[in-house]
Image 1 (cartoon, one colour):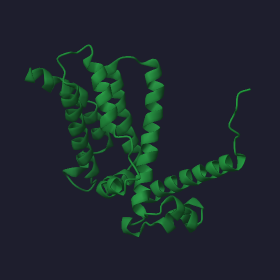
Image 2 (cartoon, one colour):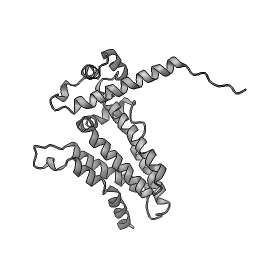
Image 3 (tube, one colour):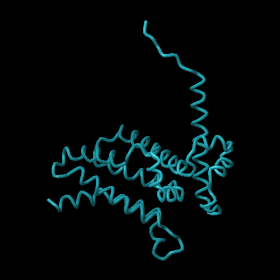
Image 4 (tube, one colour):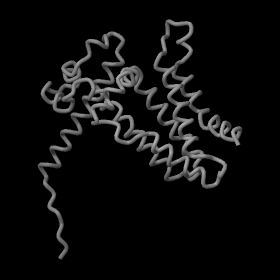
Length: 214
């Protein structure tokens, strides 16, 4: 008879409760950070807990390093949604090029959906990375794997150079979008639609540059 590991019902319930609280807290943080009536400097774990309807103790259990963990959790939730979208897309699409373009598109749309919460998180990216608790799945690694797949039928392409070019292009667009200011003649042009449009060109531009360097 096969030995089956007994499921601990209490552990399962605790995991469900933890995940539900995490979801509420992250949504609360995103909502608060996107609220123009709330100054970013006044946002803290206690305020996030209050809006989420959880105790402050529960919130600190999820975010022991204060706002660094809040921003990290925001990134983590976004990456998880991108991964889900990619998995579904990859089930029906086999073209490496379309896979790469979808990967870029999903990232851009997720960032846009996060709004100002993404801006605040990106401005704290060094602290998030230094904590060592977040961003375990590097977007570059995913992109490099896709570029390696694309290179199978496009031998003239250097997948690593192509991935680096695309990351640089995406981060450049991201920086301009992060600096968006509706009251500025210059920075107001770098809105959500601009970011979506420009990021959609990154793959073609990377391929074009590689072809020119041959």
